[in-house]
Length: 269
Image (cartoon, rainbow, N blue to C red; front, side, top):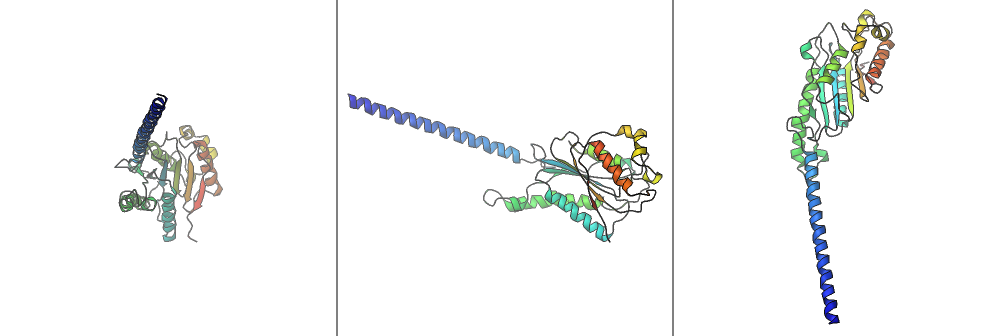
């Protein structure tokens, strides 16, 4: 009888252990299935924008102000810098572009396009690097480069409403105003604002702008945004001191709530 009780206890212990192991396996499989589903949802992309269905990782809005042709050296620099903007952006960054124009019909953003995974970061064990590479090149890089080349084509204009065009680009970019992640503005311009709100050609500066009705229309849509300015050298007609330009745009972006702009100059000498 004592042997029988010991045997029964051992059998019961084995049963409990097997049940526990089975429960752990069920939980493990369930956890793996949950994680797989979560990963699939996180990596799922919108077929039109290539943006993650969970939302972009960041946003970059590029504004082109090119009313006069660039020299060959300037154009080469600009394309190289814009390509670096794309290369340095994290996967999932949303890109839009706009142009400074006196025609209100041009006050809009290009369709949003997010940077997908590229071939270099694809796993040959669990992914198809060739397919990922083709998607990156055909659906993202080529359309983006086409937009860049189209918007860098100079078109003569009498007015240059930079502030107005920038706010239109920001407003027309899906989710940019309310996005809580990293935001970046890239402004390619000679910075010579020329509109009814302010004209440097008429001797305008920050002080005169602050006293004008246009100042009351300033918002704060660029809070904590990074700003990069690629400055195009132009004859500074009406601007005796070039420092006036830098001072104005420094104060303008400060008023918008962004970080201090970082400048690069598109020189060719």
